[in-house]
Each structure stands twice: as C-alpha cells, then as structure tokens.
Length: 280
Image 1 (cartoon, rainbow, N blue to C red):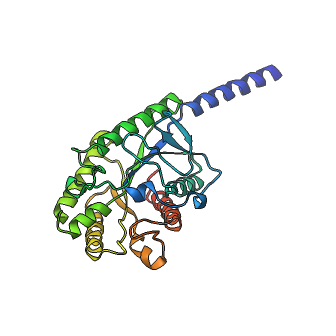
Image 2 (image 1 turned 135 degrees about the vertical axis):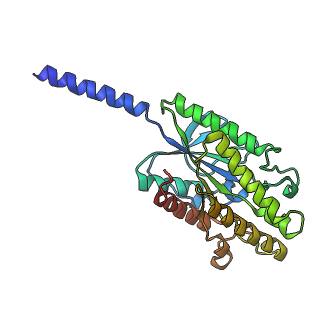
Image 3 (image 1 turned 90 degrees about the vertical axis):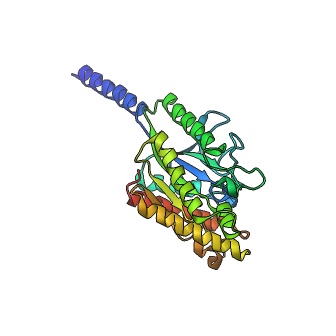
C-alpha cells in the first residue's frame, strides 16, 4: 500500500512540474518616449518580493525586474535611472498573485508623427524605426518565454506613455490635432494587426509643460485626443489620468519629466486600474 501511495504522489509531482513548466504567461509591453523610459531615481523605485521579470534584449532572456529598466539596444533606451515599471509590475503581481513579465520599448525624445521628430530621435510611424523594432523585441521576448517552457504566451497589453514631442509640435503649429489622432489610431491598429484584434492598448495621459505656454496648450490637445480615441474604441483605455496635476503636486523634476514620486504613483494606480478592468 505504501508503495502504491508513493507511486501516486511521485506521478502527481511529475505531472505538476510538467504543467507548471508549460504554463502560459502574459507579457506587458511598455512603449513610448522618455516618461515611459523613466528619468526618475532608481534608489526610490519600488522593489517587491513578487516574481517580476523583464526581457533583456542583449542577453536574449528574462532577468529579475529592477530599475534601471531597459537596455540601450534595438533603438530603445535604458531608464535614467528610475521608471514607473517596477511599481506597476510589483503592485500588479501583488494583487494577482501571478508572475509578471514585461518588455520595455521606450526611446527618449521620440515622437509619434514624423512631423514632430527632432534631432533624429526617432518616431513611431510605420515609416520610422521604433514600431518595427518593438515588433522584433516583442517577438524575441515571446520566443524566450517559449524557450523557458512557458507555453504559448501572449501579449496582455500595450502600455503607452507618449505625446510630449507631438504636443509641442501641435502647439507650435507644425502638426495638426487631426494628424496626431490619425497617427495614434494607426499605431493601435498596427499592434493589433500583428498581435491580436482585441489587444488592450492602455494610455498614460500626457502631462503638462511647466515652462512653455504654447507647448502646454499642445499637450492639452494631445490629452483630449487620447481621451477621444479611448472613448471610441472598446479595447483602448486611459489607464492613468492624473499627469495634468503633477505641476501642482510638485512631481516634475524639470518642465516635462516625472519624478520618482510621480512614477511610483503611476505604476501603483495603473496596476489597480488594469486589474479592475480585467486586463489580465
């Protein structure tokens, strides 16, 4: 009888390990420009005990998530030095009790429209390098998950923090609101065409410009468009809408970049929003 029980327990253990090895996980992509990349303070970044990982394109493998997140690779930039990503991931994992995997596809100074690009810093139009580079990095991350025995993993969402360059271009008359809206809708369509028609696209609203009036007016137009696009599409969301209050909260480290208090708040509230909206 003892032998039979031990055999049953051994079989259960083996099958449990096999199931765990082949479990699928969901991958979150963080894309955009410098506030997606993060220019906060890594010493004040959130560190949790939950299992959270980021894809390292230089190592072609997943590593434990911590700031500075990202790599100077594939046209993207590493955080300088803190970001919202650890706060998002560890808070999300704490709520869901699931390991979190992320891919950082952010480039400081990048625009959505080629008309808003400055100093050859890149743009997210299909004619530019960043969108296609993000496709490649996401594909590599999904392949790495499969190699690690995670089964047929898929994207959970694109988290988008961008709009400062385009807002400035709108404010200065170099880009129209209609052009920005068309570009944002096209970007979302490009991701869904490649990774699934119901892929959630979660927007962190563009904030304010603290020292340039015409730029700040352009930022307000960008926020309005972001809200319109989310209202018009079932799977597009405004995941965080408090960036317009950061000047009053003294959460800017310069006229446009969020400090670590702001980044940690974004991550925490974004995680809560996504769980509440079943973006899992």
